[in-house]
Structures are given as C-alpha cells and as structure tokens.
Image (tube, rainbow, N blue to C red):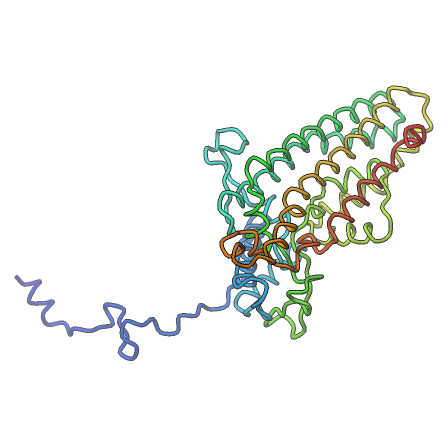
Length: 382
C-alpha cells in the first residue's frame, strides 16, 4: 500500500514511455550518426563490414532497375564504405571477394562443406538461384585448394631442377582443375537461367562501361566527382590468374588489360601472390629444357585441363546469358507475351556484356585461345 501511495505521488510523464512532447509517437530525428570503422579491429571484421556495405549499396543503386538508377550514394553509406574499402585495399563495390569468398557459413559447423550444409550470410534478389550461384562458385574455389597447395611445390621444384617433383605437382593441379569443372557443373542444377538473367545480373553489375550509369556514381562525402567501378566478374577470382602465371599463359593487349584491371578488385595479398608467381623462373622454359617425358606430359595435360575449364565456362555463359539474351530480344518484339516473363525484365545494357563490363563471349573465347597457345610446340601444331 505504501508503494502504491509513493508511485501516485510521482508526476506522470510521457518521457517514461519514449513519447515526445513535440512529435508524439514519431521518433525524433531517426537518422543515425555517421557510422565509423574505427572499432573494426581485424581483417575478418573488415571483410564482413565490406560485404554488408556492398550488399546495401548494390540494393540501393539497382532497386529501380536500369532506367531509374541513382546518381549519388548517400554519405551515411558512402563514407564508412569508403573507409572500410581503403583499409582493405578493395574498391567500394561488391566484388568476388565479398559475394563468394566472404559470404558463407555452415549450418552445422561440424558438417560437410557442401551445398546442403552451406548458406549465405547476405543475399540479393534471386532467391534460391542467387544462393546457388554464390555457393557453387564457392565450391569451385574450394576444389582449387589442392592446386593452390601445389603451386609452391612447382616453383621450388623448378628452382631445384627436380623434374619428378614438378611433374607430380602438375598432375595434382590437373586433377584439381578437373574437380573445379565438376563443381561448376552444379550451376545448372542450382541456378535457373531465367532468374539469373532476368533478376540477378543487374545486382551484380557496376558503374563502369555500363550505359545505365555512363558517368559512374558519386560517393557523397568522399569526393564530388563520380567514380567508376566494374561489377562482379569471374575474372576477379585469383585462381585462373595464378594458373596463367604459373603455366606461362600470355594474353593479348585488350583481354590482358581487362584481366590486369580485375586484379585491383582482389584482396591485395592475393594480388601480390599472382605477381610473385609471375616473377618466378619460367615453368614452361624449364619443361622445354628437360628431357623428361613425364614432365612434358604433365605440363601438357595441365594446360589442356585449363583449356577445358575455360571451354566449360563458355558453355555456362551461353546457357545463362547468350540464350536468355536472345529470348529477351524476341520477347521485346512481342510485348504482350513479355509482360509476365522474368527474362523480359533484364537490363538491355547487359545483353552483350558481362557484369564486369567486358564483351563477354569475345573476351572468353580470346582468353581460351590464348590458353591453348601455352601448349608445347608439338601439341600446338597438332
């Protein structure tokens, strides 16, 4: 009774209920203070922050499709995004390093690293197909791990002129590339081409070499002038760059320039690895100097499997981009039929280009053909 009497003597106030005298139930000044990256302490935290800010940015920029794109990223997003990107050495846009390499968790921590036990940390429109696209690409990266472990064995074997060690390591790399192809085949199981082409692609595209955003994007609070960045691309994966440098694959000016630019979208340590592999003694020259049939065959087989991987990638691009693009063009000439078709929603600016901005089929065929040129002379002539 005494407590009740005491409470009744306290003045009744709306402040106790988070009700404003001026705005009532409306939250006064709901905009949060500018986020700071200063409390992010390590590489893992920074990568998670970059992934989060990247997904928010892609959703914001492309939410209205290709016809109503924004020209400016608000400073509350742009400034912390820029700060995190500078600390990581990554560009302020969604990259392969974000969407694939840093965007997964196991449902069961003790379970296998497979499609059934993996899920995304963050996603974009596309549902199960978006999950499938990122997860299958992650499994391709995982299949390459044995190859990566064997690269130092090849390099050190060439330095010691140990033909047997180099040959065995090349055989292991070849098997790893075959496993990458098998993993990539899962794309047709887990990703629906019409969803990929009609819904997903725009959220993976950037604001460089893109007619939807010819001037780029202004990062408010960073600089007044627009900046241009390429969207996600398989060329941003460090894997094939490592294989190319190891095997001595040389790319012509245009395709080589694009591949080199894509290295700026990789974590700096991965970019440095590619560069350091390129500075090692030439594997191809070593193979040509040795009178070892086992080494010759191992090198040839490895290059052949790399060609096969690039051939299969061409097939994937045809299935998920070239064929749907032709269907989209057909539907635009039949507007009534197009209304309910997912493919018809796809941005026309990306019909002949990859999300990274390249003329995709010409580029991939050129890169594939240049890989064939790395074969030893006898096989090249055949």
